[in-house]
Image 1: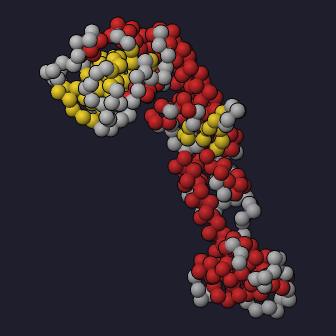
Image 2: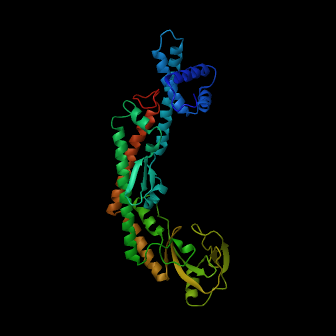
Amino acid sequence: MRRKKRLSKRDIAALTKEYERRVKKELREEVLFDMSEKYERSIRQIERYVQQGRKEILTEKKGKLPSVVIVGNEEARLKTAHNEDIRKAIELWITKQCPASFEDLSSLKSGKLDAWGIETRVIPGAQWQAMLTMASHPLYDSLRAHLVPPVVEESFWDKALEIRDKVLGFVSKAAEALQAIEKTAVEETGLTVGADAWHGEPVIGLTSAFTQTVFNRCLDIQDFTNWAYHAWGIVWPATGGAIITWVNEGIRLLKGMGYDPRIVVTTWQVMGQNVILPRGPNERIACGNAAPTLPASIAFMLCFGNEDIAIAYNPEQLAACEQAHKAMIQGSVSWNDAIALRQDQENLDNLSNDILAQLQKARYFPSFPGRCSFCP
């Protein structure tokens, strides 16, 4: 039988009888696994053969032994197991039907979002796409068949598709808002956005945090009430890395007066984000391989709270960046596009909560109406 590509009705009947005989004494999962190995078929295929074999047996002579009773009991067990699979899929969906987190909303520039039960992504050469997170689940078609009234409302699937379209629209609007913020920042400061690599090389411009902090304020997902602006000198010596020091020492270096001998160096090996800043006027921080040697490139950094938002040639440029950023932060709340985005986010939360409430109710149903391809 194992060598055959397709099993005949007689083979399937024999397989079914073997299964029925063994399942009386052994665990069902162990029987399925063993028969899967024996007949070189998947467990799911063995289950299908058993279901098919039962139907064939039922159509045979009525005098056949208590196979009818066995089939009935096993069919009930299969149906119970299938209902449990549907319930687990619903519970997974519930975990995916969550509102957008701070991290989700702060990374919208990438076009990726996994919230409100929807996944969005950017396809190269195409526009952004959105799909139900559960659409890739093996039991998605079964959910479509079983999540019907009275388990859920008649409009359940319409709402699931509606929220998909609304999330796609929200992500598109968010991207347009970020582009508008970036354009305004460049016009107001005269610097381009792209200075995130300042940790390892001389670079002048705005960092992505400049526009991101404004955007986060637009969506009201970050409170900057106690955040302050502070400026620092940045030195890129020939040894590599970067040195973070005080503005006064940066100006001193620009004038060719050399490093201040009263300031000591603290080495910080970690490069990239989350570098530490000098803790007092007598300390400078050397990141990576940086050493206080000359010649070196000199610039100045503007920070907003714990975010570095701009790198400029001189403190005067930093002052212009601070003024522009402060004005954009203050005006972001009343910006029409920001108001529309916040309203869209609220609508998405409400629609998602409606879907979530129906899913939470559905998981408590002992059985589900409708039929799918996996139903016994």
